[in-house]
Amino acid sequence: MRARLSDIAQQADVSEATVSRVLNDRPGVAPETRQAVLTALDVLGYERPARLRKRSAGLVGLVVPELENPIFPAFAQVIESSLAQSGFTPVLCTQTPGGVREDEYVELLLDRQVSGIVFVSGLHADTAANHDRYRALIARPLPIVMINGYAPNIPAPFVSCDDREAADLAVAHLVALGHRRIGLITGPDRFVPVQRRVGGYTGAMQRLTDVSDEELDGLTELSLFGVEGGEAAAGRLIERGVTGLICGSDLMALGAIRAARQRGLSVPGDVSVVGYDDSSLMAFTDPPLTTVRQPVIAMAVAAVRALVDEINGHPAPHSEYLFRPELVVRGSTAVVRQAGAGAKPQRPAPSSLVIPA
Image 1: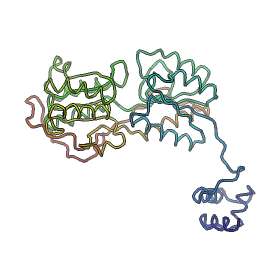
Image 2: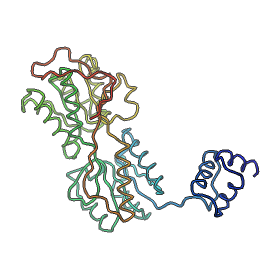
Image 3: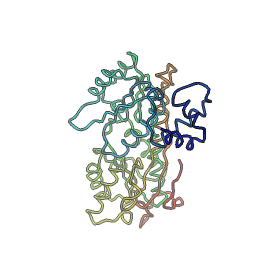
Image 4: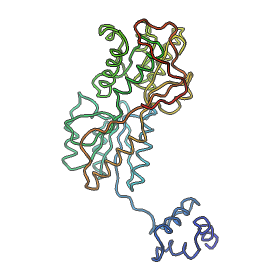
């Protein structure tokens, strides 16, 4: 015990007597000194005495659609860490095809008397879904916060990446490289983020190129999210002569690269590809993927703060917080081999740069 006290005292730069007072929860120790001793305990790997362990402020549910797409584990990790820092214990609920549905998870969370729930890309983003489920939770009352997807009929805080801006950034980047026939691959159009992405793409193409509305219809492919959906949609657009592809997720972009290579085309030599999310490992793909980055940390922290405020009786604004994306330029985009006549020339963006929105 003497050795442990001396180790802790040395780590915290205090006397052993001070360490003893903190461990026995006795008065007469300044708050910052007490915290230094507790931090030393944690750093040295000693378990805190039971009387000094911080009690959980309650359970908070975290519902995500899947873990196969790396962006969702990224959100989950930051949300769980932020909740823990606020004293809450996160309960992660992951959906899988044919597995437990969102509503079933909510029932399980209610049985565990959670203090609130964070929904990431849930049914709130689906315009075809019935949103009464969320209004019923709010009426209990149970604080909830939604990430990525906005429904004005749900009186709750929403946190989203600006999908219109994301599509605009991607189009502007490819146009700057001389591309004119730029295709868009994204998910089903019933989802709010997809609708916004299509709107941003269409507006940017109309502003920056002379492509007609009729041509634009043939340059947009809605598919299933994932590698296979991206591959199938990219194949159709490549057959229509596109030189640039903007994808609704990084996984769809990887599918697009595979579709190009299966046709004997190189990326970015023949086809430039832009992803969305900047999920983990995208800098290490072949080629490294140019993508539009979601500010995951800022979004997740904002969502947790809003939820904690709601739980503590300080209602957060029932509106949508929009976060600006960033264009991350890597090796999957390049100057078009023969620039389309309709492109309005701009200076190409250099590779390997992060360009703030």
